[in-house]
Image (cartoon, rainbow, N blue to C red; front, side):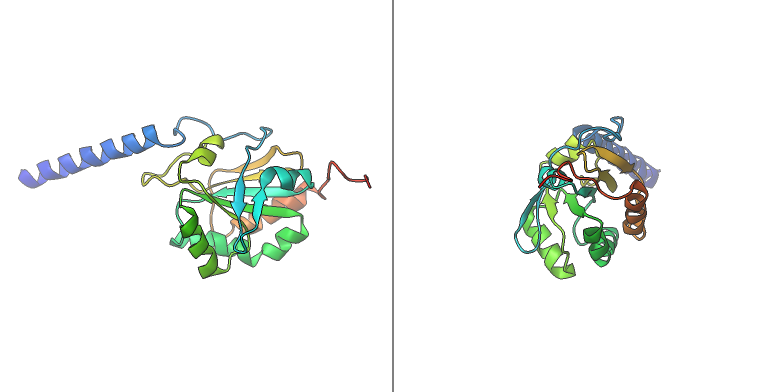
Length: 192
């Protein structure tokens, strides 16, 4: 009887914690992800060389962008996803795509993660969850952001949303989507 009471109490406490994290987290579970066609909120990240990238500058240059949210630096699934982007990085550059990885981890964690795995694209430190909230990405029960990706078109609007990401194949999936969208078009195309 005592062990079942302890189990029931633990289950109730865990359920309460999950409800609190979901309620006070950056995005509520019942709030839909930012939709296709919506303007992509600004994202600013720094790469391993210390260069700062802004989503708005990439769009202005007529580039596609990938804004991918992940739970935590240097964990198995997040590492697999980041390394898949790294391994296909030259293909993304050739297609005119800038990649932004976003998590709630602070800048020092991102720097260590980039150095350990030689990640060539910018990571966005979002400890407050402001970027996560702007894209309406829900939190995990541990407080990180769920694994969700957005493909931003050259017009600065969300072109595709990926709510259920498989970290092992997602980079290839995005390259295929970009190829299907056709050649990039720049607002400045044809101007000299």
